[in-house]
Length: 134
Image (cartoon, rainbow, N blue to C red):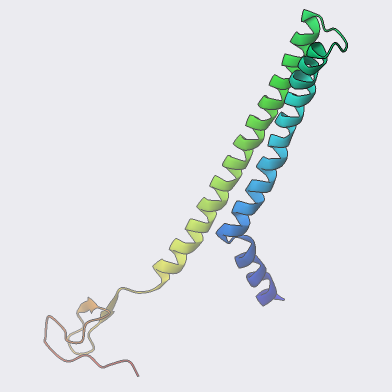
């Protein structure tokens, strides 16, 4: 079960999946703006042009208020998603740094006990050959 959860975590936090999720959410929020634009601006203008129902100035102000409300909702949704993804990316980076920090960069020479680079084949202090990995 642990292996299954690890695989799911890798899948869910992969860049493409996160990008797709953000795209779907932003698209849903943006559809509210488009719907509001057509319902509150384009349709009334078409009705005025074609001789449909007449709108007063107060009606137009109400339509503008509805549209601005949809735009504000979109901006709030985008800001929340931005903050959420920024936090997720920070957590992912922290996990990666911990994994990278676990790998040692130095080793101890078995002959002179000096600290040397992990990739060294000879000790720079005593010049002894280092035992190879078996």
